[in-house]
Image (cartoon, rainbow, N blue to C red; front, side):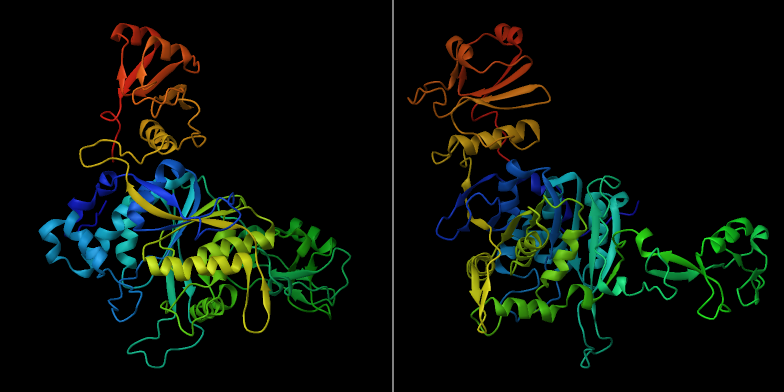
Length: 533
């Protein structure tokens, strides 16, 4: 299979595994609404934030939508749509090294995207799906990159979104009126898109000109554009007119089937009974939804101007740093494609917060209980635009013409803290038991901790019949520096029982290797045998 290569690839191909796990701290002052909503807004570099979130949400996200930088080269905006920001250049220098000085903007973009996509894949459940917005600048590179990270066999579709409602008359060559949305599954075959709701436009096709008691119907052609010997015959209309397929074509049904359809009043010959026969399809028989198509028009899912107007209505400013924010109708259309209304949605390029807004709005409309995790790097954007937008749609706001009721819900505003481990590999003093427990369970099992540790029991959870324990911070009740953190006979007797292998993390062990084997225990010393990245 052809592979994509670029300058700096060797330095970033496994970089997502080397990123240190960090602490997340909830800022109560910036959080809004119900504290148990399950929604998060994280301020910080999305690579660091994703790694910090991984122990809690790996394999739990059903739907990911991201709108990464399109890498257009535009540098005049406040919120740049490129990879030339000081933060990205600093990161490239640290990760890629001196070679980063020779990178083209496409090399930089690929270096930035690869580790982030690799981490995002770890968040997806087996039946999860990811949608990525992009335009012509990087769509060819993105398709190859997604093939490499997710596998070409997990490609689902490329959606064309008509983002503009009018022609750009100042275009140099063509008016660029669309973006792409690439769709990939974690495991193709385990996710199938839901049918989209039928609209009034779809319903309007169904009439009932003959007063059929079975209700409204629409007609379809009865001709097949190929010749089949058993389906070439004459049909006589009620007016006596004879209809025979033209050469090279045939009817869609053999004569016996066609006679049965006519007898059952399922063939329409027009009001006067002498029109070309057509099959009646009853509204009551069609699917209760519409199969999603790959072309999404602006009148169905919105356009960029609509997205900007939405944002300005929610802001006290007269302008926005986002030139082309996505409309909520576009993201809602994506969310509707997941059959379940109780899912976790992740957007690690949150920007103005359209994804969070769409989740809250769609839940209000259909009674769903979707939750969101948003990540935004720029502190000012995250605090003043993303969080403020979510706050207004949750609590309600005045749009200048009247009060708009809030959608309800809430979110926790989180900030990235320091790494769990210092430069020497020791656990930092600020790390609490629940934080280290989540990290230990995830790095040991590859799965998120089943329940957030309370600090009242050393048993973190059971995975594939292996019980994981952590002796830390005097979890057994002895708060002295070494109390209860060493595996002794007394400590072992007080551990919650488990019939199966036990993996115990602690600062020391007083039991012999023979005793450990007999008890079915694997002991791992804290902090030296805890994975730090």
